[in-house]
Image 1 (cartoon, rainbow, N blue to C red):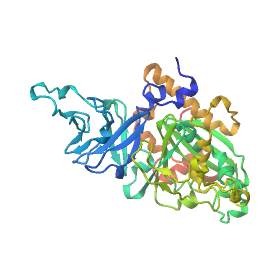
Image 2 (cartoon, one colour; image 1 turned 60 degrees about the vertical axis):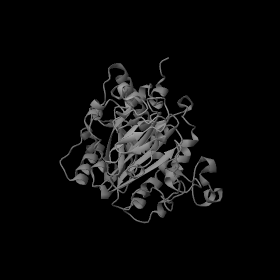
Image 3 (cartoon, one colour; image 1 turned 45 degrees about the horizontal axis):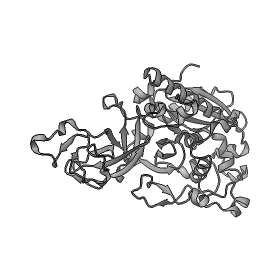
Length: 435
């Protein structure tokens, strides 16, 4: 049975169109600190596959199917020994590339280890993140040159947070800038933003922005705009980058360096991965609301398949909503910008029923990204063609997001290019596809 358009862009299992497509991109799998030298294996689920990650005695990281190719016992219970992981059922041992290096329960003259291979994937590490490529190893491109990925490790902050819903509806929160004036800043007033150079005053003074949207070689870019001071216009520039990256406009364009990954675990779970530059006050630059915290607590990690990076405020306790606070001080009564987003996207159900939606003009970025994803997946199904960014990792480095004020009569793409050049202090690298 053919996949519906909605299924084609939400379902991510190994045999699904989107699952096959995403396997042609590098995925952030775990923090480097989670996988210890000669330590116990880490359970992972990515694109619907149950995997283990381990670091061998030389420091190399292996990510492979958790099932031993012998009798399918889980290698999570394996022994991390010199140069590989050994299944405790019969002692078969595998290196990080999946090669069987020992078959001790088989008589020496009958050993056939050269014919056995665990399903293992290519891994790389950068800036405290373990990346995995789940396609064919010989096809692996370079790691994506996302702006924060190019910074020195000491300048980069990373964060992982589990979310219990489909990856697409979670990601679409970052493509929807009009929700900021309500979900996050619904009770804020212009006078609450005391500093003139804090552009959030434009968000709370006009909660119905207009939009410009443009397809690009990396995905889709939008410019949400509102009137600013006399003769000026306030722009919030956001990005979608294949296959699941966003750059939201939550900081000043001149200082903001961020990439947010919405990594599918399976159809009903995803891992939010944010990589950003430490420099700058993200609490001020990134908060479109007055008086709400960016801080949140985690439940201690455990070894369950979904036991990593879970928030204390979650759907089982209604995200610690306080109705009294909601009446007087906060539009939601939920503390923390991320938790507000998580509450709403998880409230849509495990996978949003797109047939129930009534999309509005303010959802233009969402509709365009869905279109680009569907076209890309269908093209890959047809002839294995891929977007340019899947082959040329350097394209990612040409992309930035953020907010700024420009003359009201200046073309938005020209304003973006001008801001980009000033921010990165290099020649203009922007390459926007023709309309």
